[in-house]
Length: 339
Image (cartoon, one colour):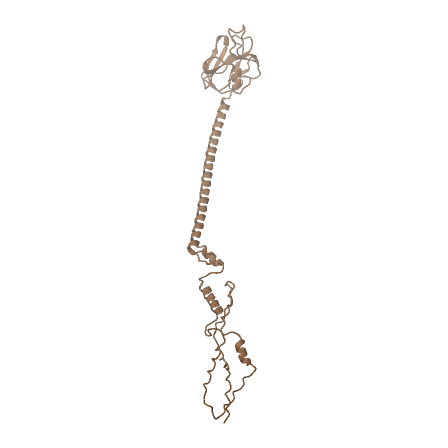
């Protein structure tokens, strides 16, 4: 009886896995300073592929030839298999790019198309924004084109209102200045007219100025005195002076009468422009004639003592409107002359 050696137990050996095919990957772009950093998410763990165990051989008839004993498994693990089993994990989908690559490419596309603006507006954009009708949208500021246009229109309206107020203020200032200048011109014209009138009036005053009827005199009797020398109160002012002293007209006038008049002696009556009459009495001689125009200071006679007189003197009377006599002293003072 032949002894049959039972077959040795078959050991399951993991066949070496095929080397992964090289995968074409897109180079990752350099990170933009304005793009949020991308976190490299770890790939899902993938179980190492192992070959399915070989099916157990079915029992067969003993072969006449003894089976060759199988090689004994090596007690030292293969360095290649160890490296393949415990090395870097393989991607689940070898032909697809990794997640960081996809994210980086998407960021480049978004930045290139300008759909999202992550930078501050440049000087060119700011200058373009100042033009009415061109307002760039900005996701960074959260301002839409319509909102920016409304703000720009509001600012332009505010500037327009300020300009209108400034123009209105300037116009008001111009009107006020014109009114002031017109008033100044009117005032200057009125002052010039007043000055001319005053000058004319001053000339008239100077021409009609009163003056003393003679020089070298002394007052011997005033208006209103009463004594036996007069039939009633004294109606004039007496200027005592030597006989022959020139007597002149007190003011401009016309000689109304001349001649001897009783107690008044030799008398000359001169009528002024306003109707006032001035009487010159007790004259020694008369040099004026009726109807003659006399200027103030022009001689009309000389001092004497004719009529009711106690010595050579000039009896002067002033009768406004050819009426009753008034105080000659006060009348002379009123016309700027002090006897």
